[in-house]
Length: 384
Image (cartoon, rainbow, N blue to C red; front, side, top):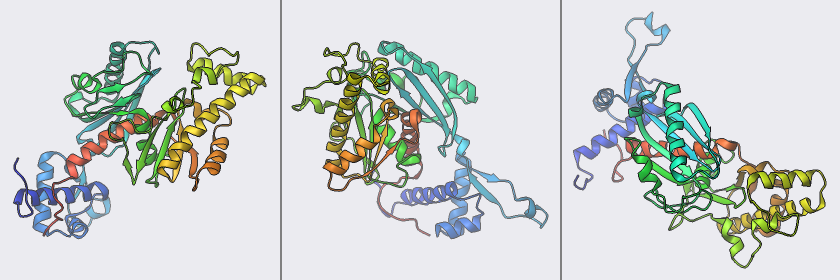
């Protein structure tokens, strides 16, 4: 398609269509008269746009209100057809694959979760993801061809095309063309994102950071990661590696998680969540060495987060991940951030818990569809 200009009729039609559709999506079954008032467009323009949107399947005439039926012929009302398409948000993690299904308004219609072995190779993990999606669509009674976009999130540094450039948390994940592999299963765009980034988007959308545009989300685990929003926009960095605070121990701080969490003087092995949970259980029971290990673990997390806060100055830090539920995480974090930072941020636990990553992946799919429905080239405003 050639370059559109401000006087291009097709651009004006697209702008007017986007304005009317956006208004319909936000309003409660408005009449044509109400749409004219809300959009500032002429009545003939609104009528033409609405008829086109009805033909496209995105808008439908809404039933008349009960009271209006008894007063003669009621004014026609219209609504956005959120059921005209569906979206998926998928989390591919070390121990589970989770999927959420929504309509075009982002309203969640169903969810399915399948467990997967931590040692499962990439092919088996992807097969689990496909099975999870198939179960979800079957339970919801939704056809696969109704999907408009799929968001996928998992650990690792993700390139723009969905390739995992580095992913040490899952076997066979580094170098995996995740986006290409999953696109073979869908006839719609597939967007791939880092898990902490997706969780940050989710908390900003409907979690602890709703209403805050400068956000750091910390995915607290064996090797913490973080996602951040600056001015309401996800900050990935030049190569998608922004927020990889788990690598800070390489910068002159050689204490690895295996060493930090050891209660014997020897590196903790195997280093997995079950072993770490055991250490924290011993700490709660009063074991001195386990309490020292827990203190070291929390201190490292605090220092990693403080480094990111000093660089970004967020309004709020949201802590999620399995370690967020450990006793004594938030208070030391608040205290140390107050000690190190010129303007300490708010600190809160994730409001979405285990659903944060999949919810963020769903939001990324919704963002993609909204860009298609509402975005237009140029900066021309709607005309009468």
